[in-house]
Image (cartoon, rainbow, N blue to C red):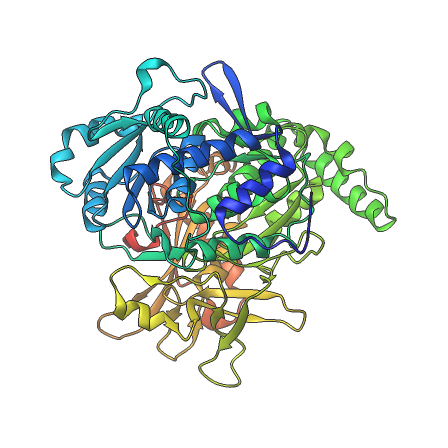
Length: 572
């Protein structure tokens, strides 16, 4: 039940409100072997409270808790329960190297590790390296009916169901309760490591208030979601964007969240769960669109589709909308009910957004950064602006810090209740980005007269030419990515060590299927075709923005689990 004035104060009252409003309605849905399991709002509230009660009894107050594993109801419940029980949850990327997981655990002096079965071997073989860890909790099967053998064990190792058994014992045999009244939402409750690739990554310290501020800000901006909506969670849950926008935010509206079986099974899960809403990163949205294009090309229906789009756009001017009927076959490939994409993590190509809109799928995007828990802006569902990353979240302030007064852009600096506490054990870097509550995002951009924010590029990615001109790789990548021959592209600057001149280079991983279609069978022919495309793009740009060289890659770029290209590991 949508209430535009509702402000989220803490996790406990937020979950309690959802339970009271939506009760027996399915909150989570997932596959368990050949069975589909539903967990209701009421069941999940009780699960989190019981887990928090057991964690409190174990004594995690003020202690750090590592959690690592695939998305599951137990994972989400453990995350929330740790914070409610006054611990500090530290979500780790399950794709980290084993050595990195050990390093993060030791670096944070974690007292407890919660992990999926996937990590049984790691934490069994190397537990002696983790001297501060008092408890290992394995996230086993989710069960609301425990067997007599699943009692809590006094020792270093237990399962998630052992924890629930302890909670049941406490409820029956003691007066143990959660101390909600004295719970502090201002202290660090979540510790996130930004890059997820090395043990020296910056640790972002968030408090419960930070996440709650984001949920309160989302409330009036994504109000088109309702109890009838079904979301498919495909992004990794350790990522703040997915946890805030894909898991916690839908609880405002009583939606059902379906948990994907994994990246490899997304197509299957879309057809099975038939979602109405999905939260994605741009690369994922691009891949979905390319899949649609390939399917249409194989069926020889490109001209039919183009005519259909023209017809639909003409009729829409007459306020006649037949898109869902006209493009029923395309939509059926996406489950048949998909209405909305919420895209975050980076800028989405406006042409991709328009393409989905042509099919009848509304695409909205946001802008955020881990240090802001993570949302800064969102394009409201009732507005359209595919080239903007949205309007500022309610309760936030923004300023554009320009190097010169007449510059058209500057560094985006923001302030609000969602801004982090600082970097973990790193006062120097904290002081560089935080000043009196104002946070330097490291992104360049501007705000138009209607309050829409535009990102021109990442400060650390900007290419500074010898003459002082700034070239934003993201802008050039957007143009080049529209070329059918291009699967992936990264634009970089390379300085000549002798002359000091900086060349703009496009590193391109070609689309193999399109190359074959165009009869480009060797690397030389592919390079020439790509070079010709880039020359044509150069003619439309200011001379200082021209790409000077094209390099064809044999392999795709290395990516994070949230499908962002790891720019910092690229060699050229």
